[in-house]
Length: 123
Image 1 (tube, helix red, strand yellow):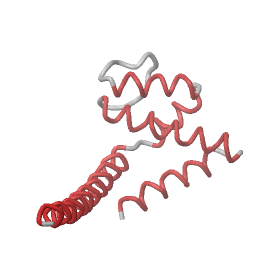
Image 2 (tube, helix red, strand yellow):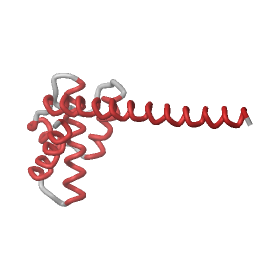
Image 3 (cartoon, one colour):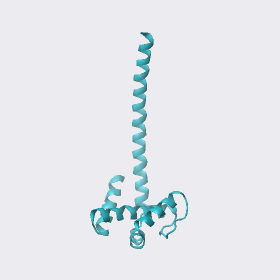
Image 4 (cartoon, helix red, strand yellow):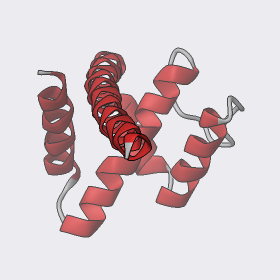
């Protein structure tokens, strides 16, 4: 009986601690995502994104994303002062191209949706 009580007490404490840890983790992940969104938004240069969309296919951009994430040079030329800015432009171009294709919308509309989405994640 005593052991059963100790086991139940331990399980309750474990569940409480799990919830606290998950809550802390979730809060800090959201904060990190907001900071990343802000970083990307302020580094974003629309002409570079537009040029990437007009010049490269979705597949080429995805391959460039993989290379940049692996800290390698991309096989295509993405404008940007450094790898971080190049990755920002590549991710934006991929998102915009996907929206253009899936929603059958033009570049300007997809770009507005993208910048609106980034801005709302910052605020």
